[in-house]
Amino acid sequence: MSSYVLTVQCPTTRGIVAAIANYLADQGCNLTDSHQYDDELTGRFFMRVSFTSETGAGLAALQKGFTPIAETFDMDWAIYDQGAKMKVLLMVSNFGHCLNDLLYRWRIGALPIEIVGVVSNHMTYQKVVVNHDIPFHHIKVTKENKPEAEARLLAVVEESGAELVVLARYMQILSDALCQKMSGRIINIHHSFLPSFKGANPYKQAYERGVKLIGATSHYVTADLDEGPIIEQDTVRITHAQSPDDYVSLGRDVEAQVLARAIHAHVQHRSFLNGNKTVVFPASPGSYASERMG
Image (tube, rainbow, N blue to C red; front, side, top):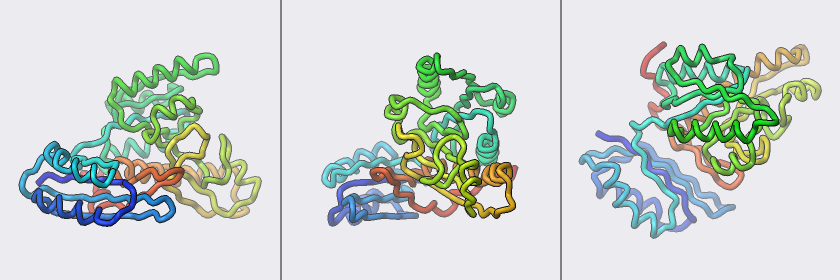
């Protein structure tokens, strides 16, 4: 049986859930997982439904049949084939822990994505990437060539068909124009528990303030540095005895885990933009299962 995901967001009103459930039942579909959230402050309704087609209804037919319902409730909606893997472009500079973690999760099937390339402003991880049979694109970035570098990046995005760009510790600030053009399609990992300690050296700031928790934050990229809607966060406890270098080492594991979870939420269509925040629904049963062990 084919498996699909329906995502919906629309103004809050009566009858949305019933309309969705009745439509899927009429099409011979069985709901396997469902989550919804009604934001009383914004008046927006969010829903994610996983379902299987028991009568062989195809994606195109399901989309066509749902369109009148979507128009009735003024929905922003989509139906996805759960067997289709999202095309993802990774970007990295000189810190490779997130890149290596993502490559491992991708290799064992724990992260259901298709990595269509890796872009870097350094050559540090060229061999690692090429050894995984993934295209490597070296795009050097300087103050003088930044517009040309971003034009090359956009060309890679378009040529590869990338649906999502992941900044896996890519230490360059993207232009406002690029952020706006790819709004909701770029995910970053920031090595701090935002909104605290923004900028390029948050671990040093945390050490100087003597905090007892450090963390990492994965968020959608916007034109405002480190201000994008947050998808995932986590922390690790530290003590007065840790050095600044300890902060960096302890933070690496948290960064890798947080970024992987954020990507998982996005590619599984569990993450919804809600103004300057997000709605992130829990993972469906079995969605974290790996295809193989190593």
